[in-house]
Length: 270
Image (cartoon, rainbow, N blue to C red; front, top):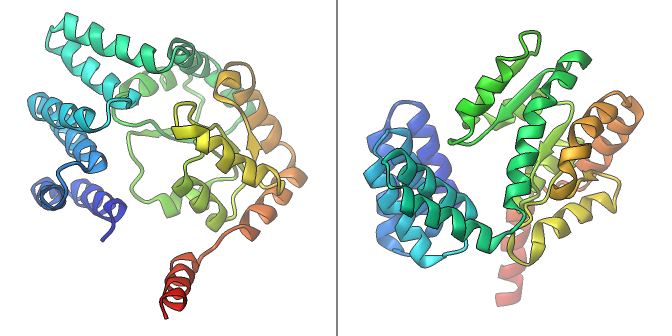
Protein backbone atom coordinates (compact mmCIF):
# COMPACT_ATOMS: atom_id res chain seq x y z
CA UNK A 1 0.00 0.00 0.00
CA UNK A 2 1.14 3.53 -0.73
CA UNK A 3 1.35 6.15 2.00
CA UNK A 4 -1.86 7.71 0.68
CA UNK A 5 -3.64 4.34 0.71
CA UNK A 6 -2.60 3.80 4.33
CA UNK A 7 -3.87 7.21 5.41
CA UNK A 8 -7.17 6.75 3.56
CA UNK A 9 -7.64 3.33 5.15
CA UNK A 10 -6.95 4.77 8.60
CA UNK A 11 -9.51 7.53 7.97
CA UNK A 12 -12.09 4.94 6.92
CA UNK A 13 -11.48 2.89 10.06
CA UNK A 14 -11.68 5.99 12.24
CA UNK A 15 -15.01 6.95 10.67
CA UNK A 16 -16.27 3.46 11.59
CA UNK A 17 -15.23 3.92 15.21
CA UNK A 18 -12.18 1.66 14.87
CA UNK A 19 -9.59 4.17 16.01
CA UNK A 20 -7.32 1.58 17.62
CA UNK A 21 -7.09 -0.36 14.34
CA UNK A 22 -6.44 2.84 12.43
CA UNK A 23 -3.63 3.83 14.79
CA UNK A 24 -2.12 0.33 14.52
CA UNK A 25 -1.96 0.64 10.72
CA UNK A 26 -0.34 4.08 10.90
CA UNK A 27 2.17 2.99 13.56
CA UNK A 28 3.08 -0.01 11.42
CA UNK A 29 3.77 2.28 8.47
CA UNK A 30 5.79 4.59 10.69
CA UNK A 31 7.92 1.67 11.85
CA UNK A 32 8.94 1.14 8.22
CA UNK A 33 9.94 4.79 7.78
CA UNK A 34 10.47 7.00 10.83
CA UNK A 35 10.60 10.15 8.67
CA UNK A 36 7.20 9.84 6.96
CA UNK A 37 5.77 13.31 7.61
CA UNK A 38 2.38 12.35 6.13
CA UNK A 39 2.04 9.44 8.57
CA UNK A 40 3.24 11.53 11.52
CA UNK A 41 0.73 14.24 10.64
CA UNK A 42 -2.09 11.69 10.31
CA UNK A 43 -1.24 10.32 13.75
CA UNK A 44 -1.20 13.86 15.10
CA UNK A 45 -4.61 14.60 13.58
CA UNK A 46 -6.04 11.38 15.01
CA UNK A 47 -4.74 12.20 18.48
CA UNK A 48 -6.10 15.74 18.28
CA UNK A 49 -9.56 14.48 17.28
CA UNK A 50 -9.45 12.17 20.30
CA UNK A 51 -8.52 15.17 22.49
CA UNK A 52 -5.14 13.62 23.24
CA UNK A 53 -3.27 16.89 22.83
CA UNK A 54 -0.02 15.54 24.29
CA UNK A 55 0.19 12.76 21.71
CA UNK A 56 -0.87 15.15 18.93
CA UNK A 57 1.90 17.57 19.86
CA UNK A 58 4.43 14.72 19.98
CA UNK A 59 3.67 13.56 16.43
CA UNK A 60 3.40 17.07 15.00
CA UNK A 61 6.75 18.09 16.48
CA UNK A 62 8.39 14.92 15.14
CA UNK A 63 7.04 15.80 11.70
CA UNK A 64 8.36 19.35 11.95
CA UNK A 65 11.83 18.04 12.81
CA UNK A 66 11.81 16.22 9.47
CA UNK A 67 10.28 19.09 7.48
CA UNK A 68 10.16 22.41 9.30
CA UNK A 69 8.28 24.47 6.71
CA UNK A 70 4.76 23.10 7.21
CA UNK A 71 2.47 26.08 7.95
CA UNK A 72 -0.62 23.93 8.57
CA UNK A 73 1.19 21.74 11.12
CA UNK A 74 2.77 24.76 12.80
CA UNK A 75 -0.71 26.24 13.08
CA UNK A 76 -1.95 23.01 14.68
CA UNK A 77 0.85 23.10 17.26
CA UNK A 78 0.10 26.76 17.97
CA UNK A 79 -3.54 25.90 18.70
CA UNK A 80 -2.51 23.12 21.07
CA UNK A 81 -0.01 25.34 22.89
CA UNK A 82 -2.68 28.03 23.20
CA UNK A 83 -5.22 25.55 24.59
CA UNK A 84 -2.65 24.40 27.17
CA UNK A 85 -1.82 27.96 28.20
CA UNK A 86 1.69 27.83 26.73
CA UNK A 87 1.40 31.24 25.10
CA UNK A 88 5.11 31.76 24.46
CA UNK A 89 5.37 28.49 22.50
CA UNK A 90 2.16 29.38 20.62
CA UNK A 91 3.60 32.78 19.69
CA UNK A 92 6.82 31.14 18.49
CA UNK A 93 4.81 28.80 16.23
CA UNK A 94 2.80 31.70 14.77
CA UNK A 95 6.04 33.62 14.15
CA UNK A 96 7.49 30.65 12.24
CA UNK A 97 4.38 30.57 10.05
CA UNK A 98 4.83 34.22 9.14
CA UNK A 99 8.53 33.62 8.49
CA UNK A 100 7.51 31.01 5.91
CA UNK A 101 4.71 33.01 4.34
CA UNK A 102 4.22 36.69 5.06
CA UNK A 103 0.80 36.56 3.36
CA UNK A 104 -0.73 34.24 5.97
CA UNK A 105 -2.37 37.15 7.79
CA UNK A 106 -4.07 37.99 4.50
CA UNK A 107 -5.11 34.33 4.13
CA UNK A 108 -6.74 34.43 7.57
CA UNK A 109 -8.52 37.63 6.58
CA UNK A 110 -9.67 35.98 3.34
CA UNK A 111 -11.21 33.12 5.31
CA UNK A 112 -13.12 35.57 7.47
CA UNK A 113 -14.32 37.35 4.33
CA UNK A 114 -15.64 34.05 2.91
CA UNK A 115 -17.54 33.48 6.16
CA UNK A 116 -19.15 36.91 5.78
CA UNK A 117 -20.06 36.24 2.15
CA UNK A 118 -21.96 33.05 2.94
CA UNK A 119 -25.02 35.27 2.71
CA UNK A 120 -24.44 35.56 -1.04
CA UNK A 121 -24.70 31.76 -1.35
CA UNK A 122 -27.85 31.86 0.79
CA UNK A 123 -29.41 34.58 -1.37
CA UNK A 124 -28.57 32.66 -4.56
CA UNK A 125 -30.17 29.47 -3.20
CA UNK A 126 -26.96 27.48 -3.57
CA UNK A 127 -26.36 24.30 -1.56
CA UNK A 128 -22.87 23.79 -0.14
CA UNK A 129 -20.86 20.73 0.87
CA UNK A 130 -17.96 22.14 2.89
CA UNK A 131 -14.92 20.13 4.01
CA UNK A 132 -13.07 22.31 6.49
CA UNK A 133 -10.29 20.24 8.08
CA UNK A 134 -10.11 19.61 11.80
CA UNK A 135 -9.32 23.01 13.20
CA UNK A 136 -11.82 25.16 11.26
CA UNK A 137 -14.89 22.92 11.56
CA UNK A 138 -16.34 24.63 14.63
CA UNK A 139 -15.63 28.09 13.22
CA UNK A 140 -17.30 27.21 9.92
CA UNK A 141 -20.37 25.70 11.60
CA UNK A 142 -20.77 28.81 13.75
CA UNK A 143 -20.55 30.96 10.64
CA UNK A 144 -23.16 28.88 8.79
CA UNK A 145 -25.53 29.16 11.77
CA UNK A 146 -25.77 32.88 11.06
CA UNK A 147 -27.53 32.08 7.78
CA UNK A 148 -30.58 29.93 8.64
CA UNK A 149 -31.81 29.73 5.02
CA UNK A 150 -28.45 28.44 3.75
CA UNK A 151 -28.37 24.72 2.94
CA UNK A 152 -24.85 23.74 3.95
CA UNK A 153 -23.28 20.47 5.11
CA UNK A 154 -20.11 21.14 7.13
CA UNK A 155 -17.63 18.43 8.11
CA UNK A 156 -13.96 18.26 9.04
CA UNK A 157 -13.53 15.39 6.58
CA UNK A 158 -15.64 13.78 3.86
CA UNK A 159 -15.11 10.03 3.79
CA UNK A 160 -17.32 9.26 0.78
CA UNK A 161 -15.71 11.63 -1.70
CA UNK A 162 -17.26 9.78 -4.63
CA UNK A 163 -20.71 10.77 -3.36
CA UNK A 164 -19.62 14.37 -2.82
CA UNK A 165 -18.26 14.63 -6.36
CA UNK A 166 -21.43 13.04 -7.75
CA UNK A 167 -23.58 15.69 -6.03
CA UNK A 168 -21.42 18.67 -6.96
CA UNK A 169 -22.18 20.97 -9.90
CA UNK A 170 -18.96 22.91 -9.19
CA UNK A 171 -15.89 22.03 -7.09
CA UNK A 172 -13.82 24.66 -5.25
CA UNK A 173 -10.47 23.16 -4.34
CA UNK A 174 -6.75 23.55 -3.92
CA UNK A 175 -4.76 22.22 -6.85
CA UNK A 176 -2.73 19.33 -5.48
CA UNK A 177 -2.05 16.47 -7.86
CA UNK A 178 -4.54 14.11 -6.21
CA UNK A 179 -7.32 16.71 -6.10
CA UNK A 180 -6.83 17.67 -9.74
CA UNK A 181 -6.78 14.00 -10.77
CA UNK A 182 -10.02 13.27 -8.89
CA UNK A 183 -11.74 16.32 -10.39
CA UNK A 184 -10.81 15.23 -13.91
CA UNK A 185 -11.80 11.60 -13.33
CA UNK A 186 -15.16 12.85 -12.05
CA UNK A 187 -15.53 15.24 -14.98
CA UNK A 188 -16.36 18.20 -12.77
CA UNK A 189 -16.06 21.94 -13.41
CA UNK A 190 -13.81 23.54 -10.82
CA UNK A 191 -12.47 26.75 -9.33
CA UNK A 192 -8.88 25.98 -8.37
CA UNK A 193 -7.10 28.03 -5.69
CA UNK A 194 -3.46 26.85 -5.63
CA UNK A 195 -1.84 26.61 -2.19
CA UNK A 196 0.70 29.49 -2.24
CA UNK A 197 3.24 27.67 -0.06
CA UNK A 198 3.48 24.54 -2.23
CA UNK A 199 7.04 23.64 -3.24
CA UNK A 200 8.13 25.59 -6.32
CA UNK A 201 4.51 26.76 -6.66
CA UNK A 202 3.68 23.44 -8.30
CA UNK A 203 -0.05 23.72 -7.53
CA UNK A 204 -0.29 26.76 -9.78
CA UNK A 205 1.27 24.72 -12.58
CA UNK A 206 -1.22 21.91 -11.91
CA UNK A 207 -4.10 24.37 -12.17
CA UNK A 208 -2.72 25.97 -15.33
CA UNK A 209 -2.67 22.58 -17.05
CA UNK A 210 -6.47 22.50 -16.71
CA UNK A 211 -7.00 26.18 -17.48
CA UNK A 212 -5.08 25.83 -20.75
CA UNK A 213 -7.61 23.20 -21.82
CA UNK A 214 -10.57 25.30 -20.64
CA UNK A 215 -11.25 22.65 -17.99
CA UNK A 216 -11.06 24.85 -14.86
CA UNK A 217 -10.90 28.42 -13.59
CA UNK A 218 -7.83 29.52 -11.60
CA UNK A 219 -8.13 31.99 -8.74
CA UNK A 220 -4.87 32.99 -6.99
CA UNK A 221 -5.05 32.71 -3.21
CA UNK A 222 -4.45 36.45 -2.82
CA UNK A 223 -7.54 37.19 -4.94
CA UNK A 224 -10.01 34.98 -3.06
CA UNK A 225 -11.16 37.84 -0.86
CA UNK A 226 -12.63 39.78 -3.76
CA UNK A 227 -13.46 37.16 -6.38
CA UNK A 228 -13.95 33.60 -5.07
CA UNK A 229 -17.60 33.68 -3.99
CA UNK A 230 -18.78 35.96 -6.80
CA UNK A 231 -16.98 33.84 -9.42
CA UNK A 232 -18.51 30.65 -8.00
CA UNK A 233 -22.03 32.06 -8.20
CA UNK A 234 -21.46 33.49 -11.68
CA UNK A 235 -20.10 30.16 -12.92
CA UNK A 236 -22.99 28.17 -11.44
CA UNK A 237 -25.45 30.45 -13.25
CA UNK A 238 -23.74 29.88 -16.61
CA UNK A 239 -24.91 26.41 -17.66
CA UNK A 240 -23.06 26.52 -20.97
CA UNK A 241 -19.78 27.30 -19.22
CA UNK A 242 -20.38 24.54 -16.66
CA UNK A 243 -21.03 22.04 -19.43
CA UNK A 244 -17.89 23.02 -21.35
CA UNK A 245 -15.68 22.91 -18.25
CA UNK A 246 -17.11 19.51 -17.31
CA UNK A 247 -16.58 18.09 -20.82
CA UNK A 248 -12.98 19.28 -20.99
CA UNK A 249 -12.25 18.18 -17.42
CA UNK A 250 -13.49 14.66 -18.11
CA UNK A 251 -11.40 14.45 -21.27
CA UNK A 252 -8.27 15.04 -19.17
CA UNK A 253 -8.99 12.18 -16.77
CA UNK A 254 -6.67 9.18 -16.84
CA UNK A 255 -8.58 6.29 -15.21
CA UNK A 256 -5.95 3.72 -16.23
CA UNK A 257 -2.92 5.82 -15.29
CA UNK A 258 -1.50 3.33 -12.75
CA UNK A 259 -1.77 0.45 -15.22
CA UNK A 260 -0.15 2.50 -17.98
CA UNK A 261 2.73 3.55 -15.71
CA UNK A 262 3.41 -0.07 -14.75
CA UNK A 263 3.32 -1.13 -18.40
CA UNK A 264 5.75 1.65 -19.35
CA UNK A 265 8.17 0.73 -16.55
CA UNK A 266 7.98 -2.95 -17.49
CA UNK A 267 8.62 -2.10 -21.13
CA UNK A 268 11.69 0.00 -20.24
CA UNK A 269 13.09 -2.74 -18.01
CA UNK A 270 12.97 -5.40 -20.71
